[in-house]
Amino acid sequence: MKRKQQDILSFFKSTNGTAQIIKKQKKNEPEVQYKPKWMQSVKVVNDSIPLIFDKIHWHRVSYYKPSFEKSLSNPRFTTVYGCDEDLKSETKRKYPIEPIPDFLLPVLKEVEKVTNQHYNMIMCNLYLEPGHSITWHSDDENFLGPNPCIASLTLGGTRDFFLREKADHQNKIKWELAHGDLIVMKGATQHDWEHAVPKRTQANEPRINLTFRKVIDYRGTNNYYKYTKFGDDDPSTSVRYLYNRKRRAVVIADEQQETKKE
Ligand SMILES: O=C(O)CCC(=O)C(=O)O
Ligand SMILES: [Fe+2]
Image 1: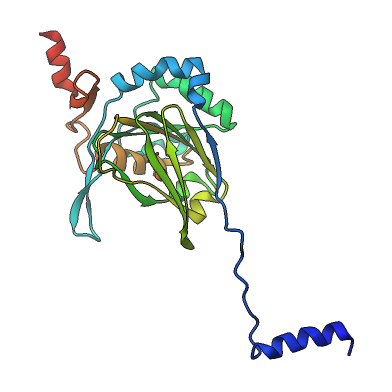
Image 2: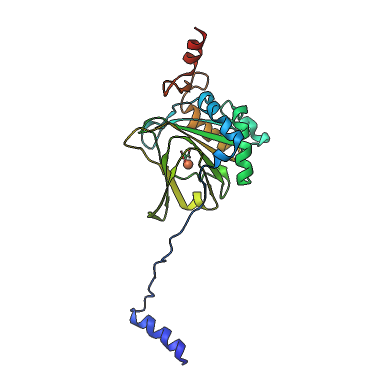
């Protein structure tokens, strides 16, 4: 027997016939691009900020979750614009679609340019109170296709954004997302990692987060309209809120219109 082979055999013998698993020293990393203050260098996006704060109609979604046997409500305000482009299945869309509004089109265009991707939906989150948050989840639904690219823009207040590996929750990464920061998750990130924006203990500036996504069919459209816009409400009576910069609070949209008329 050649010497090299002998060494290998004696190694296995010394460990009772079980090969030792050596833990990888280098931890896995998600495929994430972080562009701090990206927005500040893009004038059209910067110019859209006041409109984004003033014109988005927010919803406070609640829906019945059978596995919990109770209704849950999202701990933040949310909404969504756009839809899939599958015209053949248009009739399977369950909710009234709101197209991406004009004031978001320049932002969409610039995000598409910098990420070199096409998106058809913009999901919006408003974190107004310290308790507003999003729990650990991954945006890994089939209707986003395999390895989706999701771009996420922060406006206003700073919030911590965490990623943790599904297979090893200790492998965690934190970004402090501040005004104008763009973070892009792609590749296997949704498959292998979860992300979250935890509650804070103290209030800070309100934060708006816009996420740019591409859904491939009506299932994605239905899902996002349900979980970020209407929940179990009847779409025709669902309450809409506007953010009021002076009051730093939301007001019921139709009441704000009334106040303006008086
Ligand atoms: O607010 C954020 O930065 C993340 C929001 C998010 O993960 C989501 O809407 O799926
Ligand atoms: Fe997410």
